[in-house]
Image (cartoon, rainbow, N blue to C red):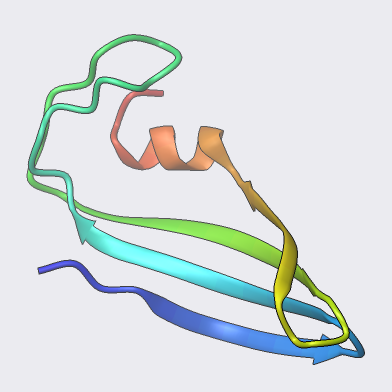
Length: 80
């Protein structure tokens, strides 16, 4: 089962920011690594991203950005 954890959410005006975590277990081959395919090891992993959102005057989402630390994620997979 997948989980999403919103660790922090804050906003001002039309902008909203969130720190979001995706915890899980490295159970399947990871094919999107910049260093090549990684085989699962059964260890816990936690992918953390920072989201920034911009809303219009009618409270509709008009822009969104996501930032993550790929190196830290790959390090968790025991690749580095």
